[in-house]
Image (cartoon, rainbow, N blue to C red):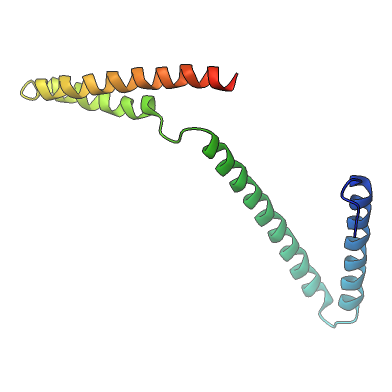
Length: 124
């Protein structure tokens, strides 16, 4: 087994293993009649595998960031409520309901600011 305390040794062992696998694949492909098509196919599989690995790493990083932060942003939710409240107030008939929705939106903005303020103290 490779020594996990020595990343250079692990990297060198990985490089040697990849080189050996590539040579074995090249030897097999040389013996086949349709080697160009199979070579292209192997390269495309490697590219897809690399892209999939990058996407899974990115998804894991995003999930980790989302777990650290609150997924509910009250300020972002308050913006459409303000617009809805303004439209309701503009109708004239539903002005009372519109003012109520605007009041709820203002409370949500205040709540979002308070949460943001205290989360900075918690992180810092």
